[in-house]
Image (cartoon, rainbow, N blue to C red; front, side, top):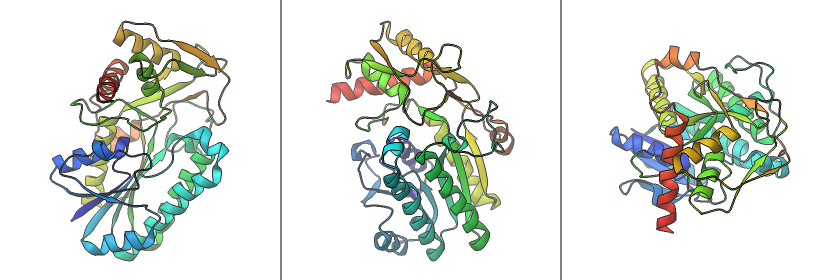
Length: 327
């Protein structure tokens, strides 16, 4: 049986492909390369260039070999952009996902892992946020992901599809072995942007919003290392296959860091002061979002390996240095 990884040439997807191949899985990557980078994939990986919304292509792919699982990373992820271009996000994230899920039902693919987001919670009144917290997304990005969660839940009831919904908090860092990392052009991830400034690939870092109700006035986020996130995916896939039970899990560490704390971590790693400017808040951004991770530990017995901001920053910085030398 094979695993289809959509968006597998992207940031998180490429890390997942490495892990699956190391585990002896047969892997096929489906990616339109709009933001993914082919060179970040393992040399022995199989890449199909195409869109998950292309029903003919996906059907042919499912007919070509037996797949038992889909790990679905493909989609658009920039919150402010979703506010400006909501229709693009409902097409790329919701409509295309619905098409992919329907193809799984038609072709009998039983397991579906979905990369959702903490943005489905909106601006929760209590921190940390548990999976039982009421969902109330404030951006089209969050809404587009929540709609896909609903589609999965309803499809599971009607057709028996097993799903793992993983609500990511802020994914950061890079492969500790330096094989892949965040390479998306014009990426907005804070740690990547800070490391770009540190390595001279960008002139300065902009802090959006300094008047939030947080200890230092800047936004607070729960950062999870991408390798730990991939580990969660692998364990959830095993759980779906072995137990046949669907799961919904937060993916974070339960510890928040502010933008200024991230800047300080990058400065510690480099020994240099970053060029920083401040600007107004961006549409859709929240003051603070931190995960409650008790369910993750209870159901999977999961323990992170890289739950340290300085470690996350060092791996991200090493990847940015590699990109700079390559470019």
